[in-house]
Every structure is written in structure tokens, then in C-alpha cells.
Image (cartoon, rainbow, N blue to C red):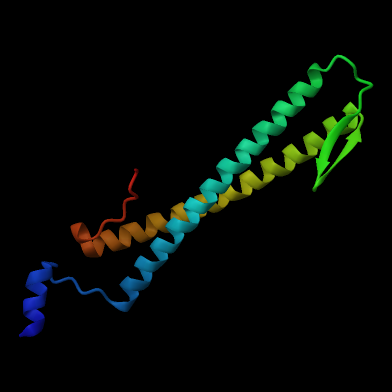
Length: 136
């Protein structure tokens, strides 16, 4: 009798949350968090990429190509020719572009997992579950 009262108060339309359901809900939440972290990382890398592009553009505008350009490696700046610096910038840009591509691939895989889980969870719980992100 106690269970029936609880059910009415909670107003869940006779939907039992099984251990499997809970696992799916947890997987959904975990993957949503991972996707957010990856998207933040992508944005940060895109900013770095833009900074490298700006530096590269500025370097091309330089009038005197005999000047040595300080380039930061770790905590120190080492001077290189403009050509060497340009090559280092290009290599750094390629590396970032590859990292962005890899992260976007991970986001895409997570989106597929989330899509599958949404279908399964909404099929069982209908309006009793909200799996949409708060866009605030």
C-alpha cells in the first residue's frame, strides 16, 4: 500500500527505472559532460590557431627579412630567421588542425551515442525524462 501512495505523489506514470535504465541515464550524463569538455577544448585550440595565423600574417608583412624573430619554445624565446619562424608556425598550425580534427571526431562519435540513448530513453520514459541541454 505504501508503494502505491508514493507512486501517486511522484506522479510517474507506472514507469519503473531499472538498473539498465539507470546505467543508460548515467552514460548519457557522462557523455554529455565529455562532449562539453571536448567542445571547450576545440574552441581553445581554434583561438590558438587564429593567434598563430595572425603571427604568420604579421611576419609576412615585415619589411626587413634579415631580422631575427623570437619564437617561444617552452619558457624561453629563441631567435630564428623569418623563414625558420614561418616554418615553425606552419608546423604548429598543422598540429593544432589535426588535434581539432581528432576532437571533432570524438564529438561526432559521442553525438551518435547520445542520439541512440535518447531514442531508447524517450521510448521508455516519454515526457517523464528531459535529456535536452539547458542553453543558458
